[in-house]
Length: 428
Image (cartoon, rainbow, N blue to C red):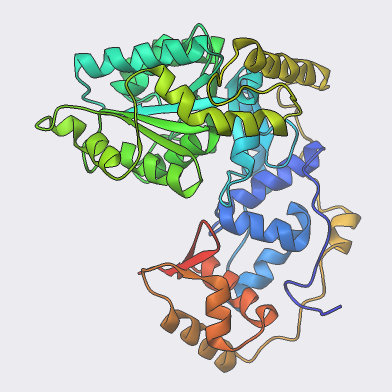
């Protein structure tokens, strides 16, 4: 076996103990570690504990001498806050993690869930749109949400003003999921405080961020990828040509989801984005029947993955009982899980002997001049336009085992960024 920073082939297993979950939280909350880096580290080291132990050495190889992973106390405090807010921790790869979301290359490693986690097992359709929505737009969103809910689909959105709020409100009796840009317990916008409480009581509220985190502008595009990733398709109801709703639509296209749009008057700026999507080939939506027809094949595939042989066809794509069976099966699974929502973990622990043994011996340190030279070659070939990692390795005429550690070092240093699909871009 080749020895090096990326020589470990330890099989991946999702976290099953409180120690494991604590390590996952520490890894994803560590500086310079985002979802793509997290998944890469887990794939190489097999466990969050081993990856945490290796991080300081990788940072030193990137010229960062003072790097420290997220302290254990910070992760313990996050878990304590989640227990107080009655949240459940969902970890990527575990049985209670949403199936559709798990396939994303930048899937959130952890999600905090308030409310009923079994909501995440039913097939979903996302509904997004303008915050300053017209009365007609809000009525249309509410009508679609009610009809889709009656057909057995859960409506997922972002709890924003306007279209999001109208869709959540109408879907409450049948099932709705709100994805938050901040912590799952943070009320934003303030006027939706009562709606958020009702969703937490009858549906589910999700966030990849710690409890108590106030949303910032950069968090909303990250939230949008989760909204589209959870859903079989995204319906846009009123959106300007440059709006966050179109970011969600682009995410959906990248993720292989159906994108649908409600048309609007050509002179209404709030309909400009929807009309643009339709012009470019997205499905035009007049009623819930159009949505059901568009997501029918995806719904059939999703139910087949879940083990249901009786799936609807394209001409009759929804049977309320089928989706409800998914939710009931999920509830049965969750009832069988032992332990409280988030049980306390003792402080003062260290890495287990098994985790320490899983850490591969590092290679002899590369001379600094050689490392700087390779970093310069990598950065010279990267720019703002995404480039496939495989193509970069071929261009450099080096092996993956040589290039991969330096890519991660540059990523930790914030000089390159990973995009979905194995693509790389240079930052700054």
